[in-house]
Image 1: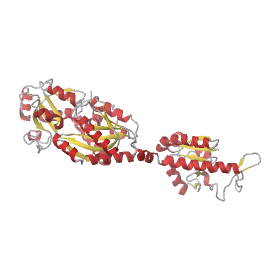
Image 2: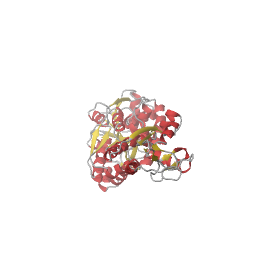
Image 3: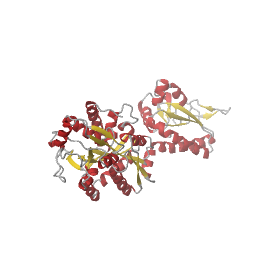
Image 4: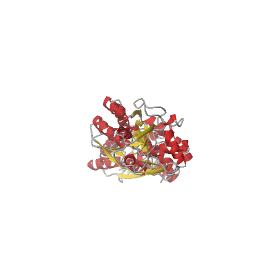
Amino acid sequence: MKIGILFGDDIGLEVVPECIKVMRAAASRAGLAVDWQPLPIGKRGHEEHGNTLPAVTEEALRELDGWVMGPIGARAQARRAQGDGGRAADPECGDKPVPGGEASDEGPGRKREYSGDGRRDRRPGHALTDPEEGNMRSVLKNVVVAIVVACLTPALTTAQTWPNKPIKMIVPFPAGGGTDFIGRLAARQLGDRLGQQVFVDNRGGANGAIGAQALMQSAPDGYTIAAISDGPTVINPALYEKLAYHPLRDFVPVAMMIKFPSMLTAHPSVPVRNVAELIALAKAKPGTLNYSSGGTGNFSHLGLELLAFQAGIKLVHVPYRGVAPATMALLAGDVQLMYNNVATALEHVRAGKMVALAVGEAQRLSALPDIPAIAETIPGFEFAAWVGVFAPAKTPREIVARMSRETAAFLKDPDVLKIFSEQQIVASYRDSEDFAQYIRRELDKWAGVIQTLGIKGE
């Protein structure tokens, strides 16, 4: 018995091999000897033979007893059967093609039987008389139907059972920074709502590129996700010509979660208490003031680069592998300045270990009315970081939608909002589609800004 394996459609390339494994086992249990014949169609057919339905495949299909293809190919074949090229589909076997305009096996135009020499007689007008083959075809037909259903619904099946084991959330920065704080909060909240543990895996380095690449290389099954900020997502693509990933090609934006209001801080030993004094000191002693950041291209880097550019001053950049160690460097007095998020810096400001010079919002924060906005000294200045949930490309849509809904739910939780209020964090939910569009706009914007500032990745 001959079964065609039609390869070529994008989804077919993923699901057909798994379907064949199941079908081989089913055929073996039924005692059927099956001749499996791989045949190119679609993209592969075009690449190998210059036609989406090449002659080699069309001729082979005439001799087949059944076929298996992915859902994209199946829909295309159904459309072809209905009105393209005179091809018909077997009414009992669903989408089985009968090329060349011939009628189906059970129709009046074409019937089969075995001739006296044991070979099947494919001439029109001859009925199928071998009862053993009839039984085998009946069993096989049931197998084909089961496989077609399996090919059409793998993602739905996965989504219905997800999650049934712990989920890993990659945070592409060391523990202790703002992204890590939000990642751990989201992990607890999502774990409670999904009924499975969500644990954090910190993968710091290269302004988040190491962790982002780890997500890209993970299986798209919903069991590896990430909390990623703006730096790895919309800044790195403009900084690095040979970046291993692209955010809209290799990831699925699940949901934006929050925005971090930002704060310009100084070590207490620095003789400045506001932005105007900082600018005056930097102009009096050019190139002597330095600042720490979470890495080249991190918001903590770009915030002060923008300020220096707009103020016409020169500051020395000292990058670290994440906001947490950069913050520790300022606390220790190893550097003099840092552009940080309020959530990370505020506790140190209140403890007297840092001085808050200004916030990076367009105006003063209602909860911190005594701290001026940078825009009061440098008109038009505004810059804040954000964090969202991402999954590997090709993660089933149902899983992405579920994660997005659960993210939206916990961002409305009174206990979470209380934490945000205390830490000066702003809930800023966007669903998957809206988040993807936002990222696309941000990619365009930052490509221009980084080119103007002349910043290069290290």
